[in-house]
Image (cartoon, rainbow, N blue to C red; front, top):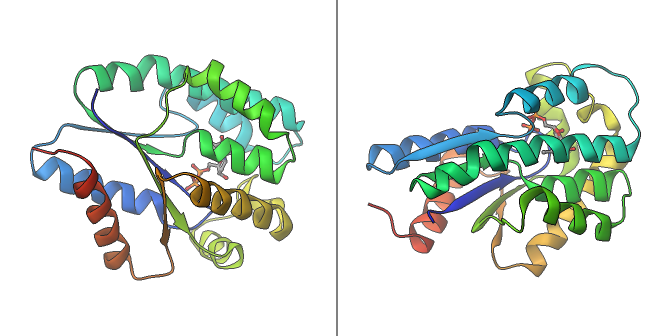
Length: 205
Ligand code: TYD
């Protein structure tokens, strides 16, 4: 199967921009690429996105976890597995590590529940490489707020986002497939670091 690469990180770290850059660069060299963002990418996933991120209402942590999980299960079955089987390299804007960071770290759901859910939802599918764009929560939230009004998750406060950041950093420390990159560097520098990681790990056309 072709590579599965996830972009992870806190709010405002520049994942979406970097993912689009990598997609363009890979595509230009003839690599077939599919880029997807969570939650979303399927009819059910888009409905989950507007449910969870659209309004400002309260959702219980477990309901929130299951909704992100439902979106992911659909994305894996309908889009990711077929693309990998067809030889496309898949770029994901967030995957299971987001649930560990936000629902685990942020909301306090036990990591063992998350591990079990991951197995149901993604059937053991794990990214070959996770690019973790690291940025202190204060800086990321300030960047996100300059872009547009904060959505429901972004508006959770600094303490919440500090817990999210901690889980991300722990993941990078304990897993060689998770690479931590300093997202405070200029966009071009981050893009080069990403390119080095991708070209050194995978055989590309
Ligand atoms: P989005 O608007 O896609 O922004 P970005 O990914 O650029 O931050 O928002 C997705 C939000 O959903 C983000 O605040 C993180 C959150 N989220 C979770 O809490 N758990 C998850 O499993 C996923 C995939 C996302």
